[in-house]
Structure formats: structure tokens, C-alpha cells
Image (tube, rainbow, N blue to C red):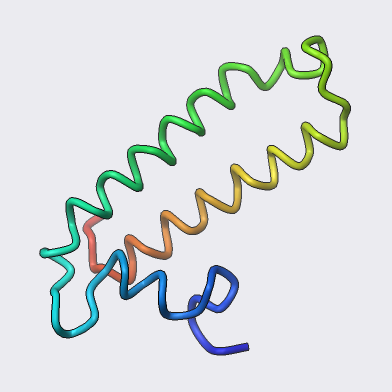
Length: 88
């Protein structure tokens, strides 16, 4: 394990979204906000469709995989936000 962030590509993802000393977290805010907006849209769409996925032909294994991916992105969003020092 390479320390904080290793589950999502090490420190690289934090530098990309939260700053690296050359660029501050404030400089990276637009990038972070766009990424967070994408995560939010994915999660809203998933929640809206969650109950209908099996009826649409998804097998339980696929539904579980999408649930896991949704949780992974929610955790990544929280980690990046914390690394950047965002409020809330």
C-alpha cells in the first residue's frame, strides 16, 4: 500500500484534483467540480433505475457490480473533497 489514496491510483488522483504544491486546490476546483458533477449524475441515474435493472435484463451480478461502482465513486468523491479541503 502506498499510503492515502492507494485504492484509487495513489497520490496521483489527489494531485490531479486537489493540487500539488504548484497548483493549489483552488486552482483545481473547476476540474474537481466537473468530476463531482459527473459522479452526482451517475448516482442519480443509478438510484432512479435501481429497482428496474433486473426487469431491463441485468442479472443480479451486474446489478451488484453497478452498486459497487457507485459506492466506489461516492468514496472517491469524499476522499478527493477531503484532500482538497473542501467544506462539507
